[in-house]
Every structure is written in structure tokens, then in C-alpha cells.
Image (cartoon, rainbow, N blue to C red; front, side, top):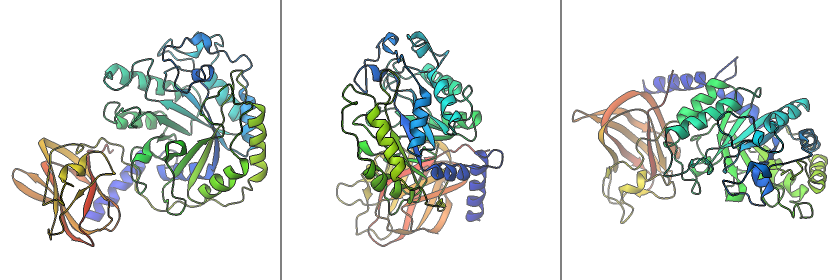
Length: 461
């Protein structure tokens, strides 16, 4: 009975992201098959020599007098790249498209031209796919921790609607600034599910990627369609064991945005980029996106052009597409178990139950070895509705377990005697409503440790 429910839920989730015969998995496979693309960090930071400029820097400084997006596209083609991704808005909130949402935009600058449109048109003319980067964090509009209100949510929705309504098909929207230690904007403050469903409504074939999703376990997709790894932030994919559609990003220069020293700086070695990144990533279901920062004229420097051409010469793109293994559809809903009251059987010393839902996958509740049948419990102050559960088995030792919920002082099974040796144990089921959820562990190869328990009330058609 449980497996029948599980399969039906998977079908529902996939159908929710399908259009014209393409479901989410097909889109993920198509993204991985693109293999290689150009990240283009070009925005008001280009003109300040800082990746994080003054959030009130005047639009008057944005003046790329020789802007040529066709040059960018030809440079990408020379490296055998297949797509581009432009920073439509970075953390300081300056929009480089003709937006109606704010006057802090390119049309108020000396350029007074829609850079997103020129980029999208140029890359399509060159036969390249078009993606966009968008920052949730926005220091100019005070969209930051402690200040977020419903108007900020509407600003995000309005700007994403503009980007996905006026510039043709967008293959992917890469979002930054969510759930990162430097941004501290949670998936609840700017509701991920609400934004995700808006993106799918506007362009069902557009993938949504959270650039900070590497915080979550590499065995499953949480809050993203594609698992993203920013190498400069210490996020590195396993080239040997990855089984998810993935993206790894790196700048060819020293920084993401252009600096005055870039024309004479040493760039990353083209051979190393091919042999240590592009080729092994492609064998591991991972797309490689290499950032190339245009200068203040709106052009790519000569040294970067030469490096891209050398990458194209060195990369022998003869690896056939690698079929993705089986994996579950992503979790996109808020975790209603996060930091809720918890109880458990006897813990091992200080590794008490509070570590099991603290939103930190590096800490765990650990069962005392003396306990023969450990249990872990979420106790909600008021009844909650939920239809999905995840357990991160940090020691990958739990083999057999049951899941129950409490309603009117009765314990009702959701899953009985499940056998599962996966590190992330996911269960999707018909919605239930109750005050407590208990994980009862019947068998484990070691004293179990649970890093995170997640409960979700997922949107389903």
C-alpha cells in the first residue's frame, strides 16, 4: 500500500513540472547534456572594483560605452560553450534590464539600454542557450535579514515575472542569496515554494537553481532542480559518487566581477580547467559554468578571449551523454519541523535531541549505545498538516524503522517496518494532520545518529 502511494506521489510531482511532453527529469538531463557554459558577472560592481559595492552607488557610474554582447557570445562559442548566464541583478540590487519595479536600473544610467535583452538576443543569434542569474539578497532595497516584509516578496515576484515574460525562453534561473551564511535569508522569509511555483507557471521548462543548495546532503535535491557547487566557497562535487544533476562554477579570473588588474593578471590555466574540471565533471553528471567578467567598456579582455579560445582547442568534446541515475524529485516546501520542540530516547552524552532538527547537517542527535530500540520525536505546539518526511541518517546505519504520528492521543503508523539503507530516507504520503511525529528505529548497524528530520506540506496537483 505504501509503495503504491509513493509511486503515485512521484508521478504527481513530475506531472507538475511537465509541459509539451517534457517533465522535470528530461529538463535536468538536457541541462547536464549542455556540459559547459559561460557565467557573466556584469553589473554595477564592474564599475567599483568591489564585488559588493556601495548599495547606494549611483546608476551614473554604469557606463559601458562599447558594450558588445555579440563579442561575449563569440567568445563563448570559441570555448565550445553552449549557453550563457548573465547577472540580471546582483546583491546590491541594480537591475540591468528595463524594469518597472524600481528606478535603480540601467535605464537611469548613461547607457540607458536593456542589457538583458541585448545579451539574450546575441546569444540566441549565436545558437547558444540563455540563462539568468538573480539575487534574492538586495541591499539597496533593504531586502536583508530583519527587514523583509510582504512588499519585498512582491518585489522579487515582480522582477522574476519580468525576466521570465519579456526575454523569450530562459533555460534556467540561477538564484543566489537564499539560505547562505552570508545572506541569512531563509526559505520561509522569501518563500521558496511560492517563488518556485511562480517560475514553473511562467516558464514550465525553466529550471530553478539555488546557488547555495550545497548546504544540503549530496544524496538528494533540496530547494533546487540542479545541485550547485561554488568552488570558491569550498563546495566541491564528488567526481566519483555524484548521482544528481549538478552544476559547478568557478571564475577564470581572480574574482567574479571585473577588476582594474584583470587585463594583465594571470588567468586560471586552460589545460587545468579542461582536465581537472570540465572533463571529470561531465563524467559525473555535472555541468561546468566558467565565469568570464567583461570590463567597464562592456567587452571581454584580450587575455580572457585567448584563454577561452585555448580551452576550445584543448577540449575534445567526444563524451556521449551520460544518462542520469534514478533520484527523487526535489523538496521545495518549507520544513515545518525545523527547530520545533523535540524528544528522544536516551542520547549519547551531549549529542541530545535538539541537534536533530537545528537546520545544521553537520550536527546530529546520537542515540546512546545502551538503547536497543531508539526513537526520535517532533512535538508540535499545535497540530500540523504534512505529507512528506525526510530523515538524514548521518552514519548511514539505520536499516529498519517505523514512522508514526499522534492524533487525539492515538499513534497512527505512516510507515511500518520500512527497510531502507539510504543516507537520506524520504517518504511521501497522503496528507495527515497531527501533533507529534515519531521515528522508531528497529534495526541499525551502529548506534544511530540523525542530523536532520524534515517535515513538509508539499504542494501537489
